[in-house]
Length: 307
Image 1 (cartoon, one colour):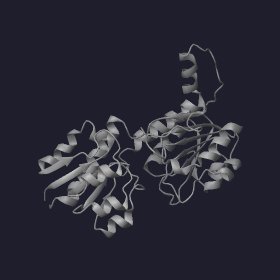
Image 2: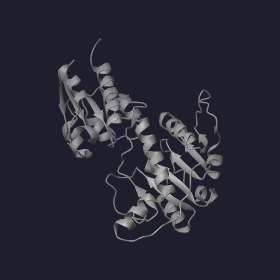
Image 3: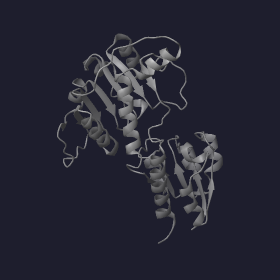
C-alpha cells in the first residue's frame, strides 16, 4: 500500500528526520501540515484528508478533523500520551491509534530531575539576578533524605524513581495500577492523598482526569514549602489554586514543562518569580526523538504495509 502520510510533531516537521526515509522507501509521500510549528485545526483540515497515515504529536485532534480524515487508517503518536485524541471516535471510524510507549521516558525523567534540582537550589532565580548585576542569594535545600512523591509510575515515573533513589531521596509512588514487580530499596507505593500529603516534592507522570489533582483542598493538605514538578499535563493542576499557594508559601516552587496552550499566554502564574518554565522540552533530546520517531514509523508500517 502507498499513499500520503502526515507528519506533525514540531521536532520532525521543521527539519525532518532520517528515519522518515523508511516511509518514502516504501512508496509513501510525506506531507507537513505546519512545518516547524504545532498545526491548527485548519492546517489539519487542509492536509489530513487523503492521508492513509499520520505521525502525530500533541496537537489536539478534533472530531471535526477525524470526520474529514477520509482514508486515514492509523494515527501513530511519537510519544505515550494520547489524551489529545478522542480514541473512541477514532476507533468508530476504523482508525487505529498507536503509541511510542516509553520511547521518551529517559529524556522526560532527566528533565524532571533537573527541574527538581533547579527548584531546590533556585538556579533560574539566581541566574536572573546575577545576570542583571545583582548579587543576591536565596537559601536552598539538599534533596538527600527528602521525600519525593511520584504520581504515575509508568515508564517515565520509574526512571524518575531510580534517579531520585540514586540521589538519596525517599520515594513514594502512586499509580492506579501499581506494578508489584517494580521493587526498589527505598521505594514504596501508597494512596494518592498519602503520597502528596507527606512529600517535600512531587513529580507528575500521569494523564489528566476529569478534574485537577492539585486543587485548593489538596494543596492545603500538603507540606508547607513543597516543590511541584509537572512534566505531564497542565490540567493536573488548578492554576488559581497554585498561584495562591505560591503567594502564601505553601508551595515553594512550581516547575512546569507543560501548558494549556502552546505557546502559553502570559499570566500571573507563569510570570511568578517562584515558577520555572521550560517549553515542553521533556522528550526533546536527540536520543528521545530518535527512539520515538523510530517506534512511530515502525507502528505506521506495521499497520500500512502487508507482511
